[in-house]
Amino acid sequence: MAIDGLIILDPTGRPIIQSSYTTYPAAYPLLHIEALNNALAKAPREGSVDPVIYVGELSCSSACCHVEVGGMRFLATISGDVDPLIAFAFLDAFIEILQDYFGVVSVATLKDNFDIVYQLLEETLDSSGHPLTTSPNLLSDIVLSPSLISKLLASVSPATPGVPSVRQGGSFGSNGASGAFTSPIPWRKAGVRHNHNEILFDVVEEMRGIVGKNGTTLVSNVFGKIESNSKLSGTPDLTLTFTNPNVMTDCAFHPCVRLQKWTRDNALSFVPPEGRFILADYQYRPPQSALVSNVPIPLSLKANMDMGEFGGTFALTLTSRLIKVMENLELKFYLGEDATSAQCTLSSAGSSVGSVGSADGSWSFNSRTKMLQWEILNMRSSGSWILRGSWTSKIKAPRPAHAFQIHFEIPSYSFSSLKVDQLRLSSETYKMYKGVRMRSKGSIEWRW
Image 1 (cartoon, one colour):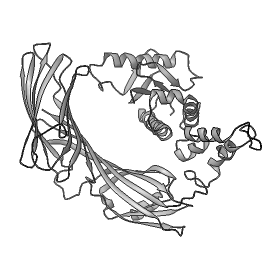
Image 2 (image 1 turned 120 degrees about the vertical axis):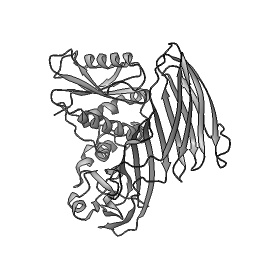
Image 3 (image 1 turned 60 degrees about the vertical axis):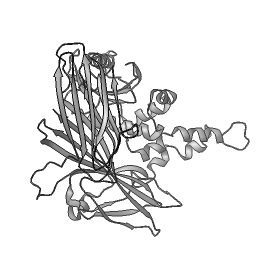
Image 4 (image 1 turned 90 degrees about the vertical axis):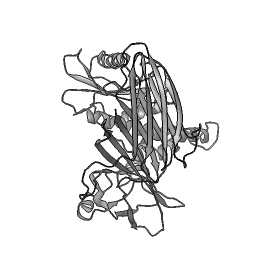
C-alpha cells in the first residue's frame, strides 16, 4: 500500500510543486488536479468538498486526498486498494515538517525555498510512494534548514584564505547526511549538549460533539495529545507517570516509548528526541460510574429561529457552564447560498458580564461564503451573551443550514483531569526542569 505522489496547488488551483510520477502517464497528475478544481468550483460553500475525490477518467480506480493549508491545497493521489488514511497521515506529517522548517507555510515561502522543499519530498517519499524519513531530527541533518544554509554561506567565502570551500568538504560535510545515522537511537542525535536542561509537556485536549435540536448531546468525545519539547543533554532515560492513567484509552505513542512498560505499569518510559515531538495521542475514557459515555458540553446555546419570506430572524443566547474563562469562542451560521445581507445587535444578561463592547464580542457577515460569524474573546462563567438579528435572501423560501458550528478554547484546563505524578531521569547526573501545561479546545455542531 503506497501513495502515488504529492502535489501542492496555489490558491488559484495551479500546481507549484509535485513529486515525480515516473511510472504513470503524463496526464495522471493533471486529471487529479482537474478533478479537485472542478469539485471546489462546484462546491456550494467553503469546506463542503469531500476530502477524498474519486477520479473516474482512468482505467484503474484512483482518488485524490486533499487538505487546505494557508490557502494552498496539498493533494496526495492514491490508486488501487489503498487506505486514504495513509495519505492523510503522510500529508499531516509533511505539513508539520514544512512548518518546522519554515515556520509559516505559504506560497511565497515555498517558492523561495523550492530546493529545500524538493529535498524534503525526496527524503520523505520514495519513488514507489512509500513514506521514508519523517522524523524532524533525522531530516534536520540530511536537509539543512534555510537559516543554517544562510549562516554557512555567510561564514564560508571563496576569497577568504585558509577557509575550505563547500566543494572541499567544509561545514556542509561535517553536518551532512553522515551525522543523521551516527547515533544508535534513530530518533535522537548523538552528543547533544545544553547549558540548561529542561523538558516541557503540553497536554492538549479537543472536544468534538454534536447536540440535537432538543438540546440533548448526541455524541461528545475528547481526544488528547501530549506535546513535548525536549532540551536535554546526553542520552536521558525518562519515566513519566500519571496519577490517573485510566482516563487514557486507544493510545498511540511515539516510537521512543517502550510499550511493554506502559502495558505493565501504565508508565511512559522513553529516551526523548531532541526538540519538539508528540509523545502520545489518546482518547478520554469517562469514569465507569458515569451514567452516559458522553462528556458534558461546557456551554449551552438557546436558538430562537423564525423563518419568513425572503429571509428570517433569530435570537441566539450563549451561556458558559464552566468556572474557567473560555477564550476565542466562535459561532458560525451558514445563511444559505442565496443570502444577501445580515444585520445583528449584541447584548448581555447578568450583572457580572456588563455591557458587551468590541472587546467582548463582534459579528460579521461574509457575502462570498454566506457565513455569519459571531466572536467572543473572553466568555466568563456567569451571565449570557445574546446575538439578535435578521438576514435577507434572494429567494422566497430561504434555506440556511440547520446547525451552528461552535469553536472555543479553554486555557489551563483539561476535560479528562489528567495529572502528571512525577518524571524520573536516569542515565544522566544533571538536574532538569520539568514543565507541564494543560490546554483544551472544542468543536461543537449545535442543531436547531
